[in-house]
Image 1: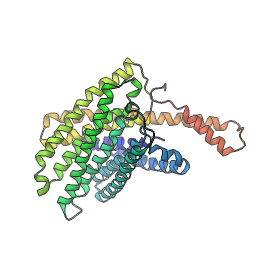
Image 2 (image 1 turned 45 degrees about the vertical axis):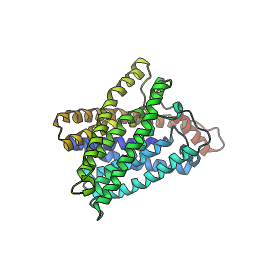
Image 3 (image 1 turned 180 degrees about the vertical axis):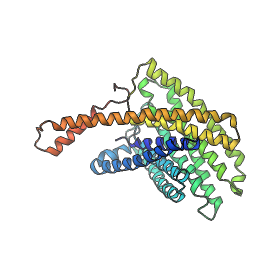
Image 4 (image 1 turned 90 degrees about the vertical axis):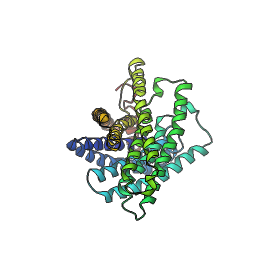
Length: 368
């Protein structure tokens, strides 16, 4: 199980929010319940992995290609909290999930980066860095987005709450600048094969899209705050910068995707990392909707409507890939388990069968 599997919850939740904002309330409600079930299921699967495969779970924290995936749990919790607050009008649940997300953020941030820093053997930059690292930015900004909805009205000192949330927003922006510099350097100065262009590269765009949403959330939450009033021009300027950067990435990533799949013939197939491609589309729709509302830019409203359609379509394809993949695994495992066992240990034999079934799953980059 990849640590980034919470990206499924991130993606489903943000598409639900985009549908809610743009008037697709029935679809939004259905996606809310799918997200709630998937969020709980992924936590149960994570707990099972910790219980049965603790060494593999702990090893993931020190692997450059997998460790950043733990940040998806933070973002998924923040998105679910926003759903409870915005769709279900349950700010108390949203606040509880914000506190939980804050704890997950602290654990992930200072465990992942410390573990990777002190690791004795490290990969090269070309092998170790990818767009998935930017989930750390998404996690940080999700604290700001949900916090703007549930925190300022819950504590007596509104300026203190907004100071904390602004600090998270700025921290997320700084993390993006650090990481995207390395990723862009890896793009242009190292050998770049089609297999290197994994789905998480869409987080290049998604990380600045959620930074845009966090900026608009701060502006909306400012109210009569003397602290944030003095910073509003700065916040608005950087919010527009983030949105422009997210928009710049879209044609770039589309062209690279065409090169990967249609020029270099890398086949499509379900991979849990594809949820990291669905999330940016939904987030771009939501952040553009909020930008239009905050900056009074009605001529951009069509972008929010267009990208919610793209987000729904990519979600449907990815979800159907998930169902097809695990139906395939289930049928393969059931067929193998029906055969007579040659092992003296039935439990060990069953684990071996399930492992073989899992190994034969179609993956992105292979035939499906």
